Amino acid sequence: MISLAQLRAELERSFSPLACECTLTGDHSLTVKLYHPGSGEVDLVVSGLSIATLGTPEALQALVEELRYELESNTLRILGPL
Image (cartoon, rainbow, N blue to C red; front, side):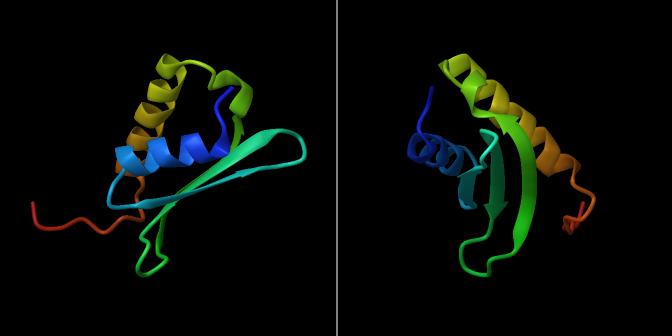
């Protein structure tokens, strides 16, 4: 199982320049928040993730890909000129 510090570092590396906050709840589910460090503006919050499934590099990469998809699909993001 990956530590929260390792998970946060990997997610921040993958989603730079966004910052990441990872919290573990009492039922061992994980919440990940991706936000802008300067303004605090939140781009994505995902809850209910199982940290127990993040024991391999492949599982962590799958999480990064899923979060990237969710971030890109987020209809609240303001799109720049096309």
